[in-house]
Length: 179
Image (cartoon, rainbow, N blue to C red; front, side):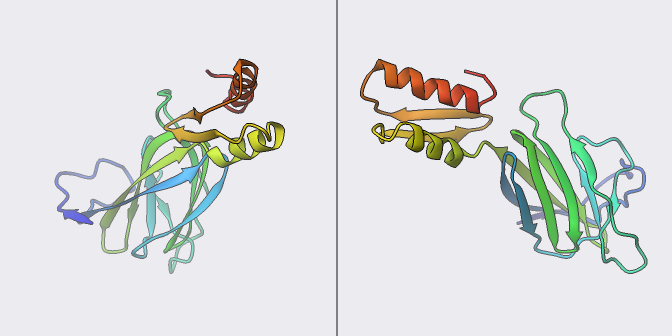
């Protein structure tokens, strides 16, 4: 973890100026699935990249504070920016559900004003398509499915061109019709 001092005025209304910044490890979340990410330090506020100003939220369970409602989805028009739902379940647990593949970040703040920056990568889960290919094409066990950013990658060998077309058809259907 790297730490640095924050400089300058408070850029987000409602958020205290960071007294320090800690870069935390990147978290990977699968598209369409929920994850609870344990936090290394108790936090009291959350600000998500790309949100309109003033969306700093107070953590549930913070003395004298109401529970934080879920933060609205995060997504810019750029296709490489992840869309996700984020909720601070407790001072040490962050809930994330990936809604669109890509990357974004979350800034969390503790009671002393230290900010924690965590990059979030929302990836397509290759296991679902891998299982479907095994079910529908049991004789084609040489196909491997991987995700790369917001794309599905098929590698391996198939017995003939017809099986290749079938595997590509299934992958295209799984990937929202994109090739």
